[in-house]
Length: 386
Image (tube, rainbow, N blue to C red; front, side, top):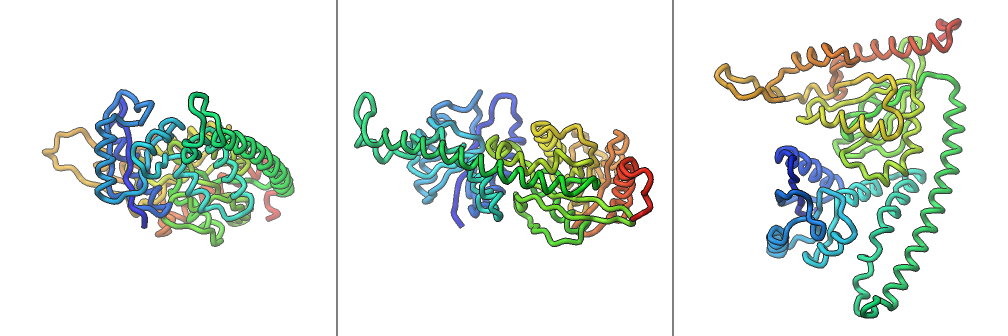
């Protein structure tokens, strides 16, 4: 497994603990991609350095560490500009990845169907286009002086045209597949449609397997599912379609949101969303916000939503001493109290463990009632035919 270091800037007004949690996620992303983080570097700045992301002193510290420890890859927690990428590669003399590029690499690994591969390839080309100049630094000696004339520059222009043509072709391919998928969705008739949404690794695919008795790939890694899976589910006498889509994540690259919009049509066209939340995660509230922001981006935030708080078996609770006068932390709230807090808000929700099958029957009963209400409105005269 490749050894890497990760880097982040703590900008003014941002809590150090939050940045640490972001780096935890970045390291999990790296692990999913097949790399192990051995050191993390952070620096407090008003804003990231426009030239090298971090300051010169911190850059020298990183350079010394990677030289002494044989590190060949450095991953940054934010999307780097083309100039930052070029300058960092020149200063550190190792491969540089930003968060966006790392996520794109994971998507490329995970894509199995032709449709998913086409979507990922489009996102990769869109990311690569403004960064072409750094691909040709090995031709610098062949370029002209002041005007940078020479074969290197002409090669960049050639590649830019090739990539623009490729992007255009991929978009046409996706439009064609979109029409086919739209036709397939239309052929499903007026069955009630339920879509699983949530932060990546919240347990959506496990939920899909549990409710539909299918065998959708699920594992404890980020973005285990890229392709949309749709299954017919029948609870008691009511049938509905259940779809599982790609998970969301903080700073999800705009290229991926754009290229996966057609996949997310299943979410936009659903009658109800099952928002699966990993309640054992220390920042599940932030993850809920990220999912809601992404739903807003794709025009699906107004959908009726039922929150499924998953992984209660892994929930950590540390009871405070009566002498502990510190401000109550998230981990000091019991699961029972957390449930009461959410129920008191009037939020339609349930607390379960898909893995341990805890409270699943109640989930099915609640889901049955929700779907039945929609079904009854759609088929007012033949509700009992199923």
